[in-house]
Length: 245
Image (cartoon, rainbow, N blue to C red):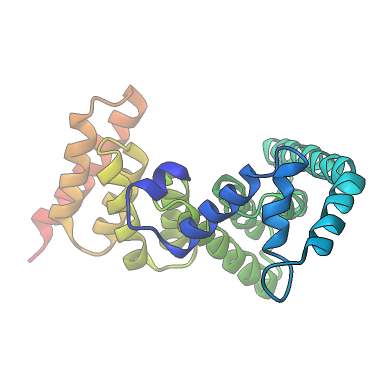
């Protein structure tokens, strides 16, 4: 997150994060609370009496505040662990519930939203008898991926995950291509992205573009299984290319 902010103009999200970080940095001791709390007092600069009341409140509540924050952080770790365990065991609906709890603690963690996108998309596959619920879950998956990308525009897993969702589940391959282009700008040898881009190009009748994708895959010297798949796809694309009017 910090690195992403440093590479582009300061956005509202980054500015807010920096302001919060600056405020939090003042809260390391009792005295460090005074200035931040003064900014929350209505009516401008507080009186000496009001400042003294703040000091008393800090003495009274600092330990409890620290305890509650620590407890919330520990609870956030619990929900993250539970969500990962559910995902590992294919329990995607339960994973969504755990991820909701984790996001309540860490609302600016792009990785949590990426897992939410994966879980919602996988949960949708099990709703074949309920079209409305399936559509709701797919929409939730798209929203989660987009939130992850908003938080970290360079997050390759979220970019690729959303491109798969758009191309294969939502029948919006044109929307997926710019995302794949971004992935390949960051990782030119991302074989998953190249395979998907080749598939989109082939389905759209852009056979030369598809050939280029498979050429790039083969040039990357992939493992045997992927090489065989790329060669098979290449033969299929070239056959269609030669048959094209």
